Length: 196
Image (tube, rainbow, N blue to C red; front, side):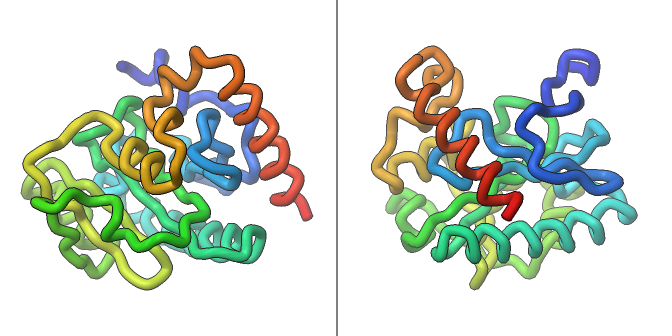
């Protein structure tokens, strides 16, 4: 997919806020109310590929969005990025969503969540390995170590942990009129809460 075909390169009708280099948008296929994306305006594959000038702005926006979601929904917030390996849209988009469950519940028994120190580790992993699967909450950041990499792995895992497995595959969700009607209501609620 090139930049001309990339849906994340275009202005978005569900934009919650913008900075010079990023958009915060409501996920069009939310796993739960409050699910949003941080998307760079520049076509970049993943957060590990962010140039120096983008990282600082991203980290500030990331922290602000995590805290804002926590305040709005009164619960913990989880975040994930498929890091260029399990993406379905090849433009960096970091997911944030209300999630109070233990992150250990999104991994399989033969997988591990390896702690990392932050975005610098993602940059190093991307430079040396070309991929990573990033997941975090307010307390810790991890990369998922697995041999079973599938597209949208975290969407699928979080949807199951949230009890809504029908939302895991966004393309299938898009074809379900009832699910999309619910999604539109959740997006409208998030937009309203984000304003206040």
